Length: 246
Length: 255
Image (cartoon, rainbow over all chains, first blue to last red; front, side, top):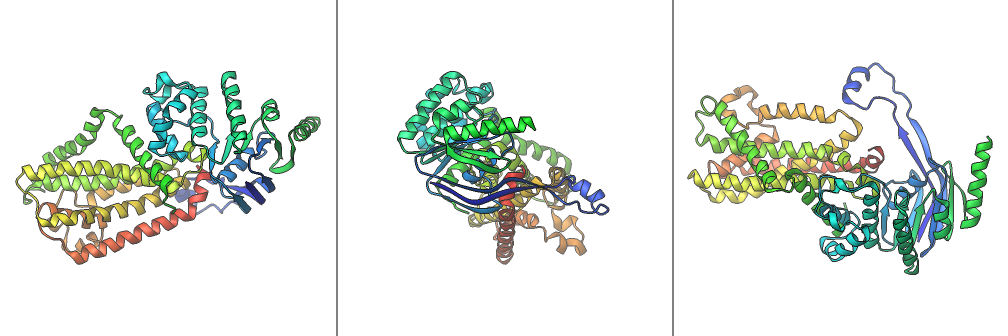
């Protein structure tokens, strides 16, 4: 279960040069500039039930990734409260996930630890991870040879092996081929049967339509809709049309 | 800090992967990390053994102790300084306690330091110096240095997020530190009497004096000084930790 009440997130940026040298040279003379504040999330109230698959849609910059980072605990909300029961496994970043100079195997152990698996767990699941990711031939090569799609697939493969109660995904199917997408779907459908809670952001509305029970539509950091998939998607489409007309 | 199984796992994997990255996972790479202090020893020995090191018995061992303890401090703080930025993607991908990143980086350097100490031990045996019971105090000296490094590293890694040129500043500070710490000379002969009390306030100087007392001169160091330094290092660590905790949640947003 995931509950967010009145959650807001503000980011503060200082336009001033961020170096000691520039501070030393100009700092004494220049007046302190007011920082730029960006309100990424504004008064978010959502309640996600156990076993629910929730989609997260909205334009670029509407706050999808920030929301996922808040739920996963990477960012702390500026105001508001979060209540989560269950262990979270998250895959929120695409690309650059693995260390290019380490072997694929070493990367699996490292990433596994991040996802909450110890060495023994990883060893037990290593074959499954490698098979699902289809990297059997490259296990002992440096990870730099993996393509972006393969990297993503391997990360997904580790995450599903490490998953416990709650999974968070940010645009995971964006770089995958059809084969990956269809196998990923199967996994998520299986997780649904296992009553795992999943929040998944995507720009691909077909994916959202197929997988999700309910959808959160974000618009400029606010929840514009949180309802059944079809209705939320319709709202999103009309929202896009409105903004085009403007 | 919640030190649970996951935290320990993460730190362990950071140590293993960091070590593999640095040595290239190969025997040759590992040999290089050991060869590095020995080559530094060779250079400094050639430069200083005639004059500065003339009155010091077993100057080679004296020098090696200085180099190893200095390198540990310098390498650990430098790598920690960059550690958080280097793990940027990882920290943004899933929740990872940021202290684990710094801990991994310090302890990975500690692992190399430990292996270097084993080699130092061989040198001490082969040169006929041997060990005395005072050597039992060595882990305590290492603990003091570890606490000191931990505190400094936490602050540096944090500053590096806010100031992009922190690594230059620290690099220069270390250059200065190398000369104001008795890595290759005996402070009693080289530092003027008036400046000596100030000079001895450098905790790294104290650590080197302790290490040499124990390993080279086979005597028990001044225990009061040692206890005092331990408390000092402990407070540096605590302050560093508190500063880090204060900025921890902002760090991930700013990288």
